[in-house]
Amino acid sequence: MNDTSVLVCITFFAAVVNGGLGHGFSSMTVPVALIFYTNRILNPVLVLVEVVINAYVLVMNRASLPAVWRRTTPILVGLLPGVLLGSYLLSFVHTGFVKFFTYVFLLPLILMQAAGIRRPIQAEWAVGTPVGGLLGIFYALTTISGPPLSLLLNNQGLPRNEFKAAISVIRVILAGFTSLGYYSLGLITPNSQALLWMILPGIIIGLPVGAYISNRVRLETFRRVCMSFDVLFVGFGLSRVLIELGLLQSPWAYSALFIPATIDVCLLTIYFKNQSAQADRAVSEGNIG
Image (cartoon, rainbow, N blue to C red; front, side, top):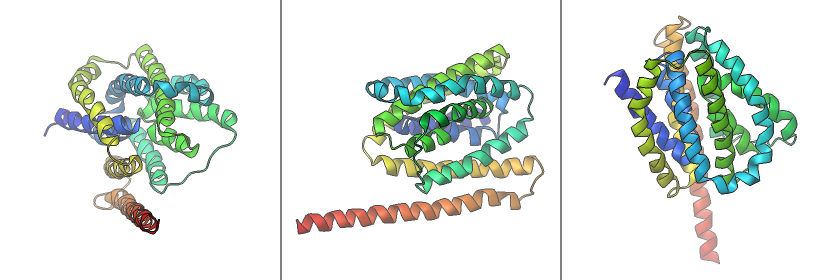
């Protein structure tokens, strides 16, 4: 299987995840795709795709937009300066270190979500703008925003449709700003545009498939299974970049895959045991009633 075929397959899978959860496209795609492509080629493709993907999710959940607009405004205020700085850094930062930073940042966020850690933030306006600035920098460098945004918005206890509306409106504007930043710096090249047309059909198919699946299974179960794949992808990507940068040699570098994967298996086992116990209690209470 060549590089393009791998990219087509992984973007289809990531689109299915995004269609079901409202996020996850880049965090699923980037860890694998960075093995074959540099950030300077890959990022413009993914940003253009995410404009379309998040616009689709926003339209599907537009009824919930009035309920979340004010809560997302502080984050939106911080996005533009962060995106401008991140786009500028991408034009000259060493791609290997961008990959390393991406993976190291993602792994703990994914595992925190897998563990169900939630700490609601009371001062949303005070925290939102600096979070938006940091998010803009990170997104422009990596095209990833789903895990930090998901962790933040899940903490706030938003209902399912409001969560999807909030995350999609932030990401539409974020991807739009970043596309303009990349264009002004000459980062959208013919190579990036060629990749875009190759992966677009699979993405268009994957989005409604993900929405269909998520409407027929428990959303939290769907989310937890997707996060387990995310841990594997990110752990593998981190192992490869550790070798690439000469920080660790094989097989020791693959501890970056083995350790997080082991933690995630434990967390996933606990999750399914809890679900089974809740189901048994529900049955018992039903029989008693």
